[in-house]
Image (cartoon, rainbow, N blue to C red; front, top):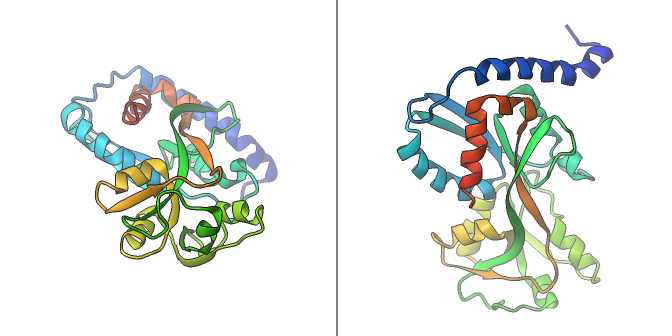
Amino acid sequence: MVPTARAEALAPAIRDIVERISGVISSAEHFDPTTATRRFRLGAPDGAVSILVPVLMKRLEKEAPGIDFAMLQVLPRPGSNSHDQAWRDALADLDAGRLDLAILPHRPAQARFHATTLYPEDFVFVTRSGHPLGRKPTVMAIANARHVLVSATGDTSGNVDRLLAERGLDRRIALTVPSFLMAVSAIASSDLIGALPRGFAKEAARTYDLQIVNAPFEMMSSDLIAIVPEAAMLDQSIAWLVETVASCFC
């Protein structure tokens, strides 16, 4: 069976009604994280996961030993022209209940979502310690370096390319990888450099011998946002989840 166009148009409103009913039922049930058993599904870019997981797991051991998590990597849609398009799949997963919470560098405009700001994030260049690029590189030095780019599709164009193009320059992408974790591993063992989220880079520097380098031009920045369906906030366990995740970034 295939839904009609009318059914597709009504689906978000009907889903919201069903979620509100479920939320009202759930809100009547007391949620005690110290005794509860439940598995939550969280979606986030791997840069945010690496910051969240160590703090979250430590807290759960003491405060909610019966709560389990499935951490899923969410990625922007390739070739998207706006944040709404880039993160549409993650928002659809929230709507469909495939995710309980998503952490995105985007605040959705739709009123059906509840959004909590976690922390501001910007990008920096990362090199191995002692890299010849130094700590205060010029724009030309950045352009002449060999770069690793995080790209799920293998596409060799990113935000840095746009910034360099505005200055009449380009760069060599010597390697593409699908995750920040893979990128930092390659950087630590070579002369490659990469543009990575600052928070992730600081966390990675605990494990790898890395050097964090501020760019000689303004890099991409945005707030990281915890997002759940507004109706789901009626569920005490989801409200606890949002509060707990937010506190991990304080």
